[in-house]
Length: 282
Image (cartoon, rainbow, N blue to C red; front, side, top):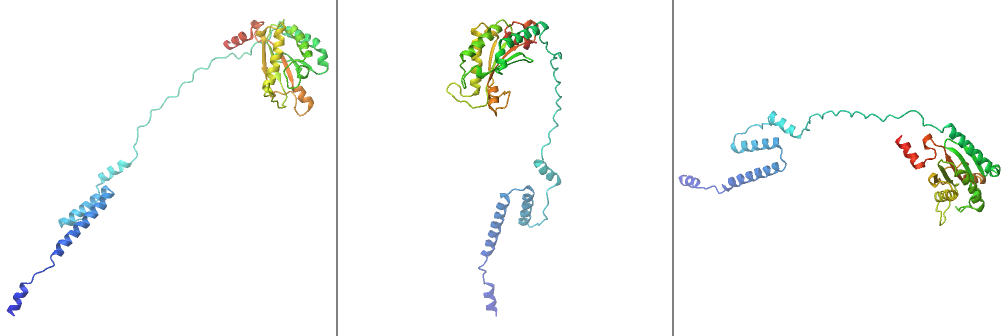
């Protein structure tokens, strides 16, 4: 019995390496936990984790302590929107005083000028009486002055701006009357809505303007002051009759001669460009 007890006391434990291996596994586990924790940093969780690890290795387990209220407020303040001071109120600008304009309508032609325009209208009606009877010419008064509408069929061939011999004779007679008139004379060309596209006139704008210029050139060549002459092309956009009939198409092909009544007594006989400058200055 004594011999058996001695052998039992001399027995050695060959599995002590398991203790070191267990410690190594524990440290390895703690290392990966730390690595996982710091991969997504959160201040509150990081503090709880660190305190838990310290308590685990120190042998003094404690309950996790959450963030203090002050630290939590600081964390919230870091993500809270910044409150800027209110912007100063900008005073509304005081509107500038508008330029005072006279409410009095512009002066119209004087009585002597009105008589002169009436005389001119009568002269034109007497001169062009045959053409007025057959409807080729219409003479009337408007707010601008005396208007003489000539149908284009007595002036130009279709789709052309070359005056016929009869048209040149008629316009020469009109020029002899107009050359003594000291007012602005505006010649306006009009067409119907039939499309045109020739080598000389690609559209109705060009045709109407060329016809107006042709009449102006006749007036200038026969003594009318060129400073008083104005040529304008209106194309097809100001018809006097519907373009759905032969009669309407013919009425819209016309040239309008407007003897413009002066709007200021001092501008009678003045260059129209200078008269316009006076209007702009008031």
